[in-house]
Amino acid sequence: ERAFNEINQKRDYPLIWIEGQPGCGKTTLINSYLKNNECDYLWYRISKSDNNLDDFLYHFSSALRDILPKTSQSLKMLSLPFKLDAKTLFLTIFSELHQNTASPFCLIFDDFHLISNNHFHEVLVESIITKNTREINTFIISRHKPPHVYSRLRARQQFSQLSKQCLDWSEDEVVELA
Image (cartoon, one colour):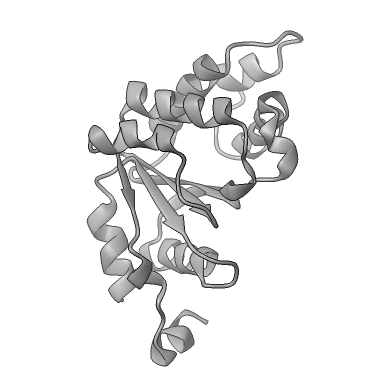
């Protein structure tokens, strides 16, 4: 309950960063939170190949097909035989998620520490700044601290991090989450 309360307090921020060591319960916490709060969500597990934005957008579009209508502009854009600007695609995706999902909606990127491509981070930050929808919470689960590019979101009150204490579990909390 303590951890869920902290997440609820941060839901006004479009981007919430969860940082912690392997096995400390980051993924379990967010999974339990979503189940207990009956949030609609899209969970995407990052892989190393997602550092290539074209690969990421291709794989991410597969996940979007379960949520967005077949007439979705972003799905049409992703199926074009030529490359489009990644920021334009991200903005279209955020816009369509906002239009086609129940509010609030959660977008979860798990294992985000695997992203080392600075352009990926910049595109995500620019998309959130431009779209600034508080009806969509983007949760980033990572083993690393956020890169400096995210300070722009923090300055705009669009970014928050869960405290390290949020992942310090008592025995009772571990049993409750399991």
